Image 1 (tube, one colour):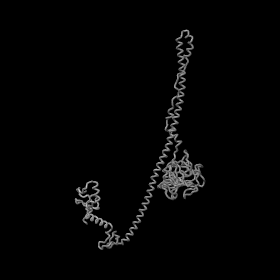
Image 2: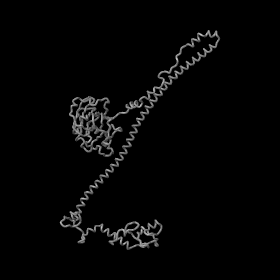
Image 3: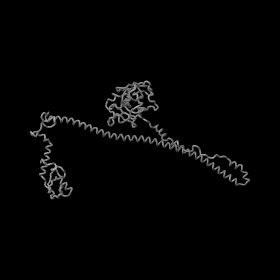
Length: 482
């Protein structure tokens, strides 16, 4: 039986070890089930190998071949169950494990231990590794749920953003429709005015034509009259004919003033649009907002909510502090923004670095330049007086951040620090509300009850005293608003 190969014990139809083989009249053997399936398919009782017709609808079983196959399968099972652990010399189960060869045998001058001890040690090591894999699997399953939530959040973000885009463009479209209607109405009014004027001119010239026609007719009749009558009426007729009447002229300004409507039309509409459209450089990034913060639709203001929103815990988002970052940061130049704080019981505002850790409680432990009122973060400068508004002035090139009261033009403090990282600004008030935003040029304040717009005519830095310019120059840095 050792000389038999797997091929010799395999069915020619299914190519597996025979199961209940039957013996055909042509001497070929096939699995009973394979033969029946083959006959049902072909609808002819023939051998699957040589195609010879079978005279028996139920071929006899090949018991000898069946016994050989069962013995072969049992032998393989015995080998796979560990029969190799039997010592060929002593016919006993191996009991020692060679530590140097990492095998189940005994070698001269080798270190070895009992197999059960090695198995116990290896199982413990494998269980430790298995726990790590199980924890990793659990973490991956958790991350899968988070990813699925993120996909839904992305879909929700896209739908909400699309809705806001349509609303904003609808406002612009309505403005353009109103401007179009107003311009066309003005054109129609001028058209009616000019047409009325020309109608009056037409009536006047019609009266002149009628008078001239009568004069011509009377004169022609007088010429045909008798000599005595002609001479008698000549002076009067001559006087009527010689009455001077100016020739009619097209009045000046009678045509439509086309340039008034078409001249620089897009530019004039754009200028009017500026009255309803405001440029707000401070744009908040909702992907960084703490789950307790709710941003306005135009991303220019934020409010605190006691209910935690269901948002993805992405790496950019704050989790411990109720903060939110802006969409852009500082790279050069000077920047200024106002923060309204009069309704806050306590507050913190200033700048921080972009690389500052947003996760966990260590946000204020480093890289924060700020002023604060009744709420010390452990760094920065304390403001002791009540203020309605605070103006923050960042000189990127000098590496300084200055604070002042824009209403009283009073200088508060100036911070300077040598650093090589990007910066952002920070606000906190007595309602436990935090704002963090960024921009890359002069900033107006955010549009909310906490922020007000800086004057468009404001000269950046003009409200600071001269001594603030004597601060030591810092290394070049990149800054962002907190």
